[in-house]
Length: 318
Image (cartoon, rainbow, N blue to C red):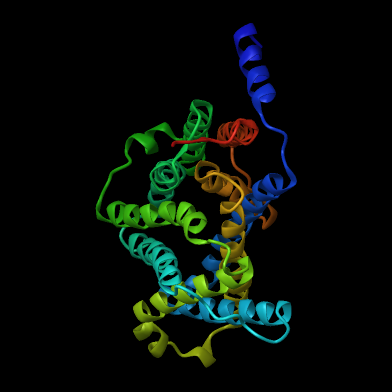
């Protein structure tokens, strides 16, 4: 290691603030968030041949809302606190609904690799929205680490194939999904801005899920009515159960938990770990392990996120 590199790493570590318990829990929440979301690709793939995307998403949120409502009832002694300023939940829920809807629209027009490449833009856009909405100014080291992690993620997504990266083409599907990625990037800083403490986080999560579920139900109403639910194989219900509990209720809660404890630039950065988790899941399922060239991209992602996690939180512009 060169003297310059050693000095840079030493400076980052020395400048890193002591991780308060709340901040550390925020980082761990977002890592768990990414692990759960990554698992949805495997489960979703099992269900995809048997059910339309609008129907499966409407059902996952219906079940997820029921699960989250039961949690709230237990926590608050048999009652669900009434919402205030309901427009907040429609706004946040609408943003996430647009993300899910445009994802499935894009997958009908392009391939998962291309959508994954577009998705890597989200953490950087979230940092931009964090500045305009919360006046958070990411430090240069944070921006640099996000760029490094994004490059590592793109390398993994394209399987370490430079030719495939050069052939990447921006078409209609990529543009549609870009709109959804913008909405997802805006979601994180808006959670912190709109959650003023009037409701506990579990209640805030429940009503946000209701907003998302309502928008998706309207979009997928025809597919819901056309689905023969009684004829669906057990694997579909297994997938719906996972998506409902872990990647609807669970991840909605986790991202809101993280957004209240971390700056916008750091909250969604952990989505860069998604290809890493997918590699592990696919390997454990016996679908094979990637080449060493791809694993090099995984190392780049982890190092980039480690530098980001150790760096100071952004300044707040006055």
